[in-house]
Amino acid sequence: MNIGIYSPYLDSVSGGERYMLTVAAHWSKKHTVTVFWDDTSILERAKERFGLDLTNIKITRNIFWGNNVFKKLFLTRQYDMIFFLSDGSIPSTLAKYNILHYQVPFPAVGYSAVKFSRYQAVVCNSEFTKRFLDIRVSNRAMVIYPPVHSIEVVNSKKEQLILSVGRFTDFHTAKKQHVLIEAFAQGMKDKKLKEWKLILAGGLLPTDQNYLARLKEKAKGLPIIIKPNVSHDQLVDYYRRASIYWHAAGYGETDPRWMEHFGITTVEAMSAGTVPVVFAGGGQREIVEDGKNGFLWEHPSDLLKQTSILVDDPKKREALRKAAIKRSRDFGEDAFCAAFDRLLERIMAV
Image (cartoon, rainbow, N blue to C red; front, side):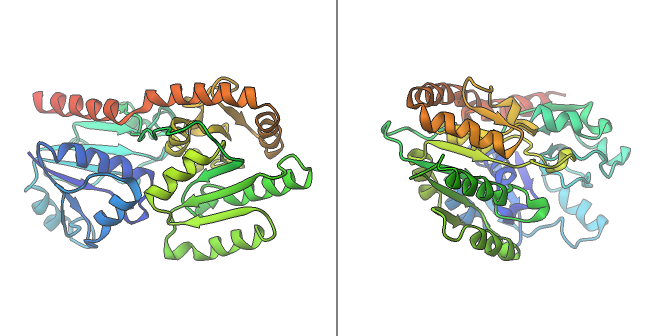
């Protein structure tokens, strides 16, 4: 089959892009797979960021940007299937088979019954996304959890490090790194986190430099390491060394769109035996069982209280570490790829 893959956010090289490119890499073993994007260096950047083998994937100009609808439709006819990551719209397509993927629970999409009739499947990244997505779309949706690369634990030695991974952006202050810096500062002041360090790592676009600068200013004088655009190998090293994982996306928000829709980095951390202490919103509740394989918090004071339990009780931390590793195995790449293979077979059988 000749398959096209399109994400309008490909240059952010974030969780949604990993989702799409993992499908692309898997299908490219048996099919011709092409990614639509104008910057041909994007696959090399994605390979560095995600550690995926993208060797067999082709790249062609982005036919979904700047073309009139008739030209766009004409070009899509060249493909047997196109897999789209939606930005809230339903793209026009004349490919024989089409799959629409939602990473964000848009309450109202740019719905068109004619356009939607061209899609054989709708896939969401979590039950949370499906639950809050426009019902005209969600009533046909299935859930395939994101692929999470399991990080091999080479040894059990952990350091006094707290890690948080997420893109640095002030678009609704997505990952809330400023909240974590403030919590860490309070923990240092209360001497609850004495001799501990906080590492903030993640992707950074040129447009978000101002937010990064504000974070660095807020972190001055504290044992906080801020690492934008960290390599895959460096990130794996952080996961292996860190004892505790923090995440605050969704804190203070009421709109489901600004929550953590799943939590790939949370599962990555768990696979490395890094105990999660994450905000109790969005898809995180589908991953972390509070008190069993990590902690869920609703206020920064709870974040510090739960972190203190882990800091003060190594036996508790070790028990949760083992439980976190076990839980992470439920979200492996093999299960993800198998689910998409079954979906492909089902679509083609109709």
